[in-house]
Length: 59
Image 1 (cartoon, rainbow, N blue to C red):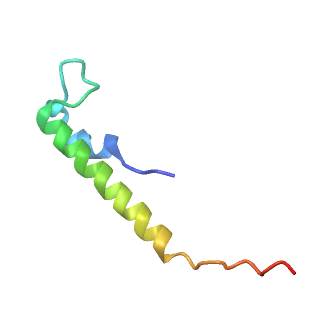
Image 2: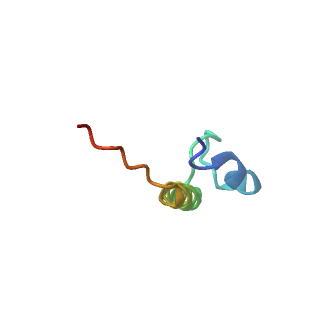
């Protein structure tokens, strides 16, 4: 399961990475937060759209 495509989101903005070229700087951190938030929202919407299966009661 992909929650957030960080590589795709930061690729056009690599100048927003910190000096180590791995971690986001302040503005890159905002992009990271938005990507993670959207990924969580998408995953939750997908989960909510799945049909619920109610187990049969045990007798």
